[in-house]
Amino acid sequence: WKMMPAQVLLCVWSGGSASSQPMRKFSCVKLSTKQWNIRNFVNYEKQQVPIDAIMFITAGGIRICVSPNQKWVQAAIKRIDENRLAKRQ
Image 1 (cartoon, rainbow, N blue to C red):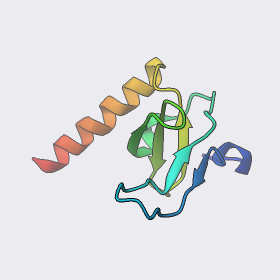
Image 2 (cartoon, rainbow, N blue to C red):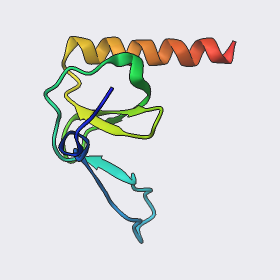
Image 3 (cartoon, rainbow, N blue to C red):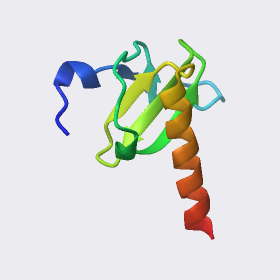
C-alpha cells in the first residue's frame, strides 16, 4: 500500500486557541476522491467545519479526508465501530 505525498496532504494542522472551546489539531480542507482500502483504517473523526467530511486515520497515523456521503465510507465507519465494540467485550 503506497501513497503519494499529494494524496496525504488533505488536512491542515491548526494550533491551539485562547478560547475556551477545544480545537482539533487537524481539519479537512480538501477531500480525496479516491476509494481507499478500508482495512487500512483504524479510526475516524467526523467533521462539519470548514467542510463536511470524515477523516480516516490509518495505523501509521496518516489522515485521509473523504466525503461522508459515499457508500464505501459508511461501510468503513461501520467496520471501525464494530472493531471497537469487539475490543471492549
